[in-house]
Amino acid sequence: MWRLGFAFHEMASGLLSVFLPLYIVAIDGTNALLDIGIMSAVAMLLAIPASFYWGYICDKTRRYKRYILLSFLSSAVILYLFTFTLNVWLLIVLYAVMSILHVAHEPPKNVLVAELYTREEWEKTFAFYEGFTEIGWLIGLILGFFMSAYGVGAVFILLLCSCLNLVAFVLSTFLVKDPGLIFERGLVTIERTIEFTCKGLAVASKILGGLSLSDTLKEENLNAFCGGLILFSLATSILFTPLPVFFSRELATPQTLIFALYALNSTGGVFGYFLAGQRSDRSVEKSALSRIAIFRSILAFVLIATMQVPTFSVVLAAVILFSMGFIYALFLIYTLALSMEIMPQRKAGLFNVLIGLGGACGSFTGPFLAETFGFVHVLLTSSITFLLAYVAFKMFT
Image (cartoon, rainbow, N blue to C red; front, side, top):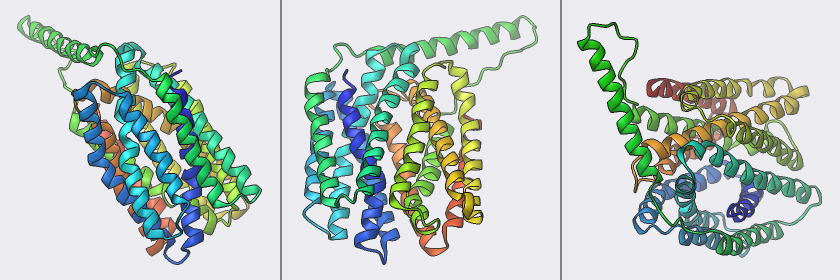
């Protein structure tokens, strides 16, 4: 039940994800793409040290609920303030402040899952959480679809997003509880150390016994894993930050249909999360990361075809977005579980830092490429960056 407040928060986030870029275009059509890129990049860059801080402080104090409540309440207040201005630069400042406070709920949420459940349940629990909250995101997109179809004003949409975050705050006040004992991640670290030591002893005994080796003693490459996270996030952000504008300008897609396309992307995510919860084999997770990266690279490249075949562009885009949502869900669950296992305590925010670093760079790079060179360069750059993520994850495994 503690996840219910998070679902309402994701409703607001899903609605904003499409509405906000199109809103910026509406109030500042001349330099809208660059404004979107600057807003996203600044917000994500500021969120990087914030994620690290929230992850450190929640583990140090062993208090998690207070930071979740701070995140939801601050989002409600700042979105309410959005309704008082049409100045793009003031909106950028408010969005950046909101981003710093918004990420306060991410590391505590990850720790709650890791400490309330055993290692064997992490994938299933992360998948249930992400799938449940993705349904909230999907509902937000559906709300956006209907409000766009009926011509609901921007002020009402922003007020609705503020109210949804306020509901998330109230529900979390009653439903979220701090874990009584904090030890599960420590146990997992000890287990991994013992497992690696035992494997080393087995290899050593075979060498001393003159037997041929079928096993290899290889420690996981944490740097490669971190690099893969940054590159994957970079490629995703390059692609998705200007994507609503791509549909609007290049494919002349109505706003209601853009919400529908993103709803399909979210639906694919829901299916992916619940599938990920059924597969908890650690070796499967590690090997799947590189396959996910290469598949995303292919999908980003195929998206170029939507510009060449306008008759079927929306149908093709729908299939691609559904597939991207599906495989991103698998990626997120696998990397979340692995990160909570291999990253040390008091660095619970490192996962969000790495994702944020790639996202910040990509959120400016994508709109800049679109404005300067066109959307084909955006799709090609994203596809190539996914390929580099594939290489990094191959090195990790």
